Each structure stands twice: as structure tokens, then as C-alpha cells.
Length: 396
Image (tube, rainbow, N blue to C red; front, side, top):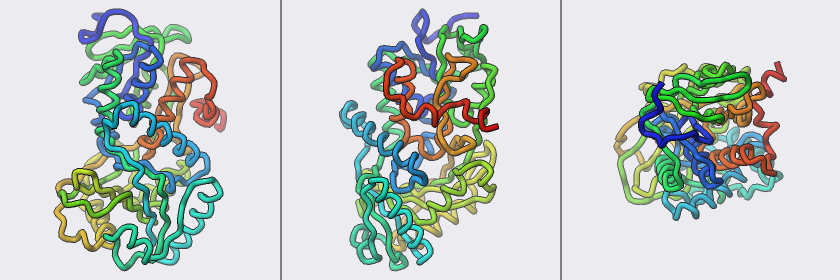
């Protein structure tokens, strides 16, 4: 079989399957460590899950102590990346406001606030008046909330493109509009990756293919349980800056917990809990629904109406804004809601980097660093047991 046309000759240390946020950040991290890397992406970079990500990396929405610790450390690494890439993507710690419209929601926020305080996160309880002082676009229905100054706003497309450009400067090759169709395995070793454009010699594959990761794993004779979770989002027309930070409906916590918890706790019912961010260009991003609907990623009138209803309830002053478009994406979920990162025991050259759900942006940097530590056998692989791909077979 011919060697792939758009690649330099010779072997590659690593083939990364998937050009989303996990794949591109990992490519950059590995290139800095001196690895010869090629990224194979069946479309263009950031056209899968990353193209439908909400523009925020949040801490105070994390529903477990471990996820909070991971996200907190990852945001510190994102700070470093932003500096390394000369501020080449929109990223700022603008804070977030978790808002309640009922006493039941406020009680949930109080409980979360106490837990987050105990875990060391800086959060502040606000009454309705204080919440509106922080975010004046809020309506009178807001009775209180919680403010976290460390939460960040990030443009996912700019972030991926910045990492792609930086990776290319370090020698990484991006083979876009190409597709992996096979993985050559001899015994417990990988020898090559087969693509529609040709064959790539390598002994290491990183599976960062998102919701398609199960298919890639099967090509290497491996099993991997990843399920897609659809999220619908809205984009409004531009308007002058009128808010800073991320607005999070308290119902978002319930929606996220129900949809991204352990698989036996999920339901097929659509849940909605909005987040709202105004980008530096003036557009608002409204996200998002959560629904298990297979690989179908179309928008629904029900989803658009539910998002719009919550938006107008929380921020009635935005009622005259025009919607520019609605879009949807698929988020890859593991059985237990935690990422899967690590070597496959039966095929050590195959490294999984999947299952981030809606936390791919927030977790991207720590995922990339963990993979680099695996490949360099360096110290600090703190989370490998938690992320271990073999944990499900042990449980079963």
C-alpha cells in the first residue's frame, strides 16, 4: 500500500486520531517534548464536538471533588498555554454567576457553595440584589446565587486553531479530510495506521476521536464504551458589551448531573440548564440541552424553545435580540462520567484519550500533560488509576 501523500517520509513517533481540542492540545504538548507527531482528522480541525462547545471552562459546576481538582489544575495549565501562545485565543478568568430562581435552587447552591468552600475554591454567596449588581442583565426572578472569580471564558475554535498553528511550527503534520480505516497490530504491538490516503508507520496511537473513538478502538481489536450526548446551542446577533463572565442557571447543575453521571443513572429525557456567555465580538452563546439521541445531531424546535424560554426568564432585557443560528454537537461520555486516559493493557502502544463529556475544554490541558507524562515515563502521573481504560473490565 502507498505511503500517505501529504506526509514526510519515515516513521512517526505518534499518530493522533482526532483533531478536536484534545487531539490538538496533545499534539502541541508532545511536539514540545520532541515527539514526531501526525494528527489524522476526517474533517478539518475543530469541526466535531469542539465546534459545538460552550465558550466557558467552569469550576463551580463540577459535581465531584475529583473533577473539581482536575479542572482547577487544568485551568492553571491553560493559563500557561495562553501565555506560551502569546494570547492567541480568547481566554480570561471572567468569573461565573450561578443563579437561582426558587428557594429549592438556592438551597442547592448553598449546599454546593459549602462543599466548594471545603475543597478550597473561592466562591461567594449572593442575594438577588447583589447578583444583579454583578450582572445587571439579570431579571427580578433571580433570588440569589454564587459567584466564582476563577471560572474562565474561552473561545474553543480560536483555542484549537492556536494549538494547531503552534504545533505546525514545531513540526506536527495535520492530515485533514482523511480517515483512519485500520490499525495494523502484530502480537501486542502496533506497526502502522491505515488511512484513506495511505499507510502511516508508527508504534503509538492516541485515540482522541471523541464520539467516534469506539470505532477506532475496534480497529485495533479493543472494546471501548463511549456514548454520544447531544447538546443544542444558540447564537445571537452582536450587541455592545453588557455582561462579563458566565451566567449559569441553577438548573444546569441538575441537567449536568442527570445527563453525565453514571450510565445507570442517566435517562433519555432531554434536560436543559442554560449557560450564557457574551464573546468579545458581542455575540451571546446560549447552551445547552442534554439528550441521548444516538449520533443524530440536528436541532429541534423543542430544544430551541426550551433554551429561549430559560434565557428570557433569567435575562428578560435580552428579549429583543435576534437569534442568528442554532447548532448542536455530540459529547463523548464514558460509563462513569470520568475521562478515559491511558495505555490499553493488552496493546500498550494504544493510548485512549476520550470520554470527557462536556468538560473537554476545561480538561484539555491536563489530559495533554498526562499523555505526555505517559509517553516520557515521567513522574507526576497522578490520575492514571482514575483514568485507567481497564477500570471497567475490573468493575465488571
